[in-house]
Image (cartoon, rainbow, N blue to C red; front, side):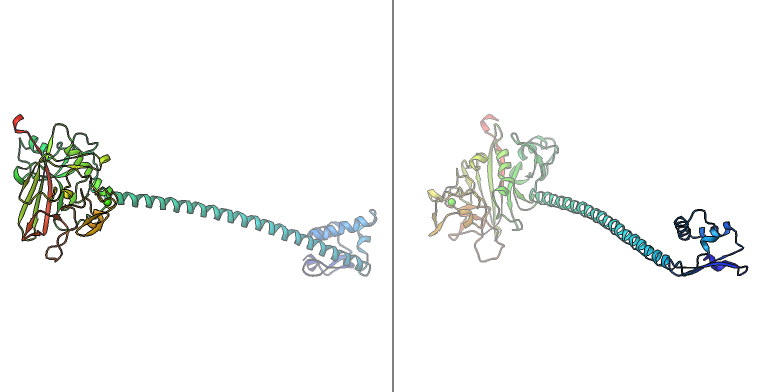
Length: 400
Ligand SMILES: [Ca+2]
C-alpha cells in the first residue's frame, strides 16, 4: 500500500482515512509533494483515482488540488459512509451478477456434458445392439450348419450316383467304398453320399444306416426331408436326395435292406423298381418284386399292413392312414409316428416295418425299436442290432 511507503518528513498537508477493499488505510499527503507525485500516488490504485475524480467533479473545477485535500476528516465522514454503502451495493451487484453468470455458465456446461454423455450412451447402446444382432446371426448360422450335416458345397461331382461312379471310374481303376460327391439328374445341387463299392458287386448308394444308436431318429419332417446324422456312422440321407437319385431318367433302382440281429445273424430283403413320388405327394414309396430271407415286411401279412404306395409320415406330418384313429394290438392309435417314438416312416396303420424306429442297445429286455416284423425266430420278432438301406441301378438284361 502506497501510504506506508511515504517518507515521514516535511509538513503534513492532509490525512485521509481510506475505507475500502479488505482493510482501511491512511492516505497522507505532504506539503512538499508535487502534484504529479500525488496523482501518481492515487493512480497506483484505480479505485482511489475514481474517487478523487468524483470528488473533484462535485467541487469547483478551478480549485487547486491543495484545497481539495485540505478538507478535514470530520467533513468527509458522510461521504465515506455513502461511498462505503455504494461500494457495498456495487460489490453486491457485481457478486450477484457474477453468481448469476456463473450459475448460467455452469448450467450450460452441465447440460453440454449431459448431452455428450447421452450421445456416448446412445452410441454404446447402438453398438451393443449391433453386436447382439451379430451374435444372434452367428448363432443361427452355427445352428443351421450343425443341422445341415451335408452342406451343398460347390465341388466337382464324381458321378450321378454310386452305380454311375462304379461304372465310369471303376472301369479304369478299382473304386473303394467311402464318401463321394454325386450330382443326380434333376437335382439342383451336388451332395455327399456313402458309396458301398464292396457289397455284392458294389455300386450301392447307402440311404440309411443304423448301428450304435448314437444318432437320434426322433425327428420332424424337415429333418427327414433334408437328411441328418453322420455319413460315416448312422444317418438318414434325406427324402429329397433319395428322390433325386431314384427318379433319374431311363433308370430304375433296386432297394436292398441288410439286417443284422443282436446274435449276429444276417438277413436281407430286396425290392426291384424302387422309386418315390415327389414332395407334393409326400414321397409316396413304390416297391417292385420282393426277394430275400427276412420276409416282405413292407407289404406285411394283412392287407392293412401294406406300406407299399404309402406316403411318408412324421409326428408333425401325418399320412399314416389312421383317420381319425386305427386299432393296433388292441390299442387306439391316431399317429403311428407317435406310437413309434416320433420317428418317420412310410407307415400304414401302422405296419410291420420301421427301420427308423428307436435303437435300443443290445442286451436290453425290450424288443428293439428297429422293426422288420416278418423276420422272426421262434415266432418272435428278431431283435435287430444294425441295418442299412442301399440302392443300386438295375439294368434290363435284354437291352444290355
Ligand atoms: Ca393319423
